[in-house]
Length: 520
Ligand code: XMP
Figure 1: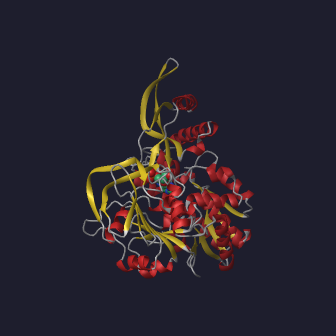
Figure 2: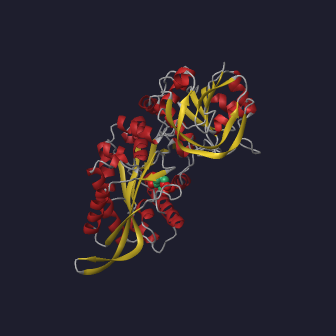
Figure 3: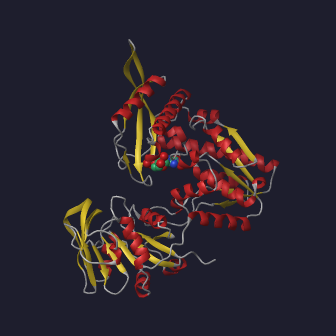
């Protein structure tokens, strides 16, 4: 099958490469990420109709700085494939085509005012001065004859350039970042006006194509584990549409580390979506047993993953004995899980450890990944088109190891009770205030410290809760949400009044990096 015409984003190791690809898709053009060192053969296989060079942390003048294969670069230029360089990509193009890049005295980081100097399709429909987001210390000093400068900022004379006769462009700023006022328009101009592309990526249609392809390809029974999150549910529904409800077997494991009512809700959703073969395994006791005395975060994650694998494999084996005929294992992997971030991206899926265990137990199983092409926001759109409940679609991400990574230190039944109750209150207040969908994640974390307080006339000695609320695009970076004080006050009041065992609430004011979103 010929691959879809794609906008190929070369990943030079910037944290923004995925973001660029997502933005292109939001504009309804198909995009894929390629490692910067992609071979010509691989590159051509992607059916490229435009190329974007991403940013990256390196400096082009240092030895071994990342550069595309020379034959790939020459091919792009010779075949007049429209090319846009962003940040490092901008400097790279300038340098490869004879310009000069050097390190500046002063870095330009954050918002800058861009002055557009010329009329050009790239800036069509955008004002002469506009705010852009910059993050660089190196800059293009001068360009060869055949290039023109399109825009400048106070610190970057060459903040945007183009080739006089070829479709080659560079921008020093980041159009993919929301802080760049007209970033979306600039990317759209590049795709539509410079590259002359027609939108070809409508996620609901593509999901329908995936389902009909699976319908043709899959012969036999499929097995899957559903956590309650949008990815695993959507993947299960897509395969259900392809093989029919009789041929998909769904296992839901209650780890005891889920939120209040989460298992019940998941089973209810499965029933509503017409699944017939649903198997519930309550393993909460086993998880708790195995987590006893475990305090190291990595160890905790290993114990949860291993226990999950054991429980899932045991149930799968039992079903295989009773029913038999399983051919496929459905995995809800999404595109960013497949293409590793950074310049070494390999397009091979990682098989989750619990799936590996099942594959060993039932030989001959094949992994099916209906969501492998999609980003999270696209999965949500697909879920909506398949009729999954809005509550599932809009819910915040919830980590695989569940509440275990939101309890600092040892996990006990008592701590789980406290955290479950606190989580209900936090989610309720966020929804009530209309803030739930405005933030990326909002959850309480149970610290392992007890502190002194007074409740009524009595001195108390109880746990402290931390509130973690972040805004983010993709969880790679995040900033803490600057919430109104009165909202935080109300929330803290409810938490100390209603959750037995808690007498203090702290608000986490660290960004990621340096802190992670979860505490463990
Ligand atoms: P961190 O804590 O690394 O989290 O900043 C980034 C995002 O990933 C989620 N997360 C996980 N999701 N299994 C998951 O499916 C996990 O083990 C896991 N750990 C963290 C986290 O909630 C955040 O959205």
